[in-house]
Amino acid sequence: MVSDIKRWIVQTHQKVGNKLPQEAALIEQMGVARGTVREALASLQAQGLVKVSTGPNGGATLTQPPYERCLEAVSNFLYFQSVDIVTLYALRRAVEPELAANAALRLTDADIDDLEALVGLSHPEHGGSADWNERREADPLFHDRLADACSSPMLALFCRLLNDIIRRVIVVRNAQDDFSDFDEEIFHSHSALIEAFRSRDPERARALMQEHMAHAEALALEAESRVDRGSLLMSPGD
Image (cartoon, rainbow, N blue to C red):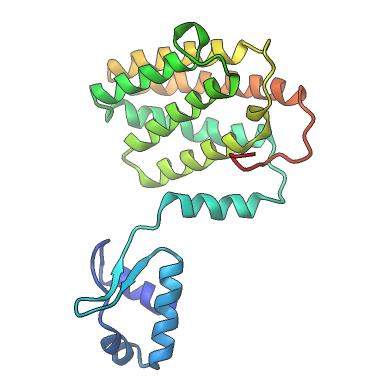
């Protein structure tokens, strides 16, 4: 029944905000019992695809599942899996340059100003926190903003998922005070990207992001070798 409703949504080109047929209409349309329809709607609501309300104007309204639900599902899937730095950055090298090229033509001047502020927060000599972990958070936030500007929902989703997995890799939660190479790499790479964005130069942005990913991988591997970890993935609050 759930699959039948999903198929109907696709075949009839329904959009977020549209309402599904009323319960009686679904019963007649699908040829099933009332209990089956209610179970299907409850399942769709649990998946984040509909919101069911009661009352005279009630019913099931189509909703966009939040990104956090997708992240939670991926994180749970990977919880007992091995996620190594090399594979993670191989994926980032494939998608992040395309994200940068896409965003270069879509970022507004205000967006770029916000990105530039994050660049400063990534370095202690340019306004960044004395806390290593707080400075590191400016890096994934920079990449999150690029995903927000991306015109491709699929590319943006992949990049955001990889970015959040990076957040949960233990290497970014265990800092050494003398490991300043991260500060320098992020500040200089992101500053160069800002220049490409202000020039609206997608090819330059793509090339710079390729270099940035290569340098970031080398630093991540070095940092990983400095820590003793029992598990690669951890929750953001741990």
